[in-house]
Length: 274
Image: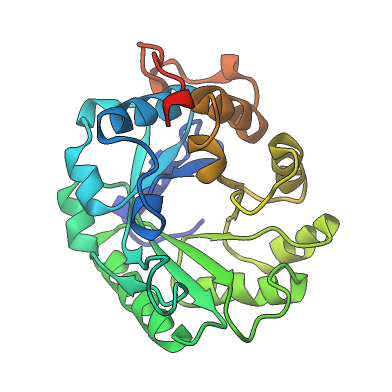
């Protein structure tokens, strides 16, 4: 990926822990939209498991990023999520900005993320927010991940390949560095979406109810550059093991890890207590 900013180039390189241009991000920002994903005393343990499993990055809101132990992220990138809505609002698809790039810089983040729902009633405001954040990211040399989905009352088929191709190109045109979206249906047509995009595409895993490994394998085979899997990690009985399995699909066997990319202390908790 070409970028004129040395700082952004360095941060982008850190986002792929193996240096292979592939990404496994674990979003843990769901406590704003849906409620707690772990008890307060176990959240650090969840992060430890995810990092030990081989995640390239975790996605957190700014407040949560302030309170977790910084030592936990020595082998993992931090992406600060700037968008929010809750399941209790009149329109859960109406994302608003609740942070800015300067917040992320103060937290030592490696990237920021913004959520946009194309086809929602507030699409125009969300696009304006994405453009503004992209401009700030250019000023500060901060990579930008767009979580951009076809979602709203005017969307009849959110997995339509032509619609997804449009969505990922919106992200490219507005100055995004990496785009996250949903998987196409039928799965074999995801190759069309990848071919249309000048950006690396990572796919969301939360909506898939079948085999997670089959989904992940299909996504990488279609040319996607990685995965973003949150709910199916933190709700699993063994989050660290789930991440490890996904990391092998994204990056290859664990014995190919750069030694410094994982913590030396193994995870001590499985998420059965969640």
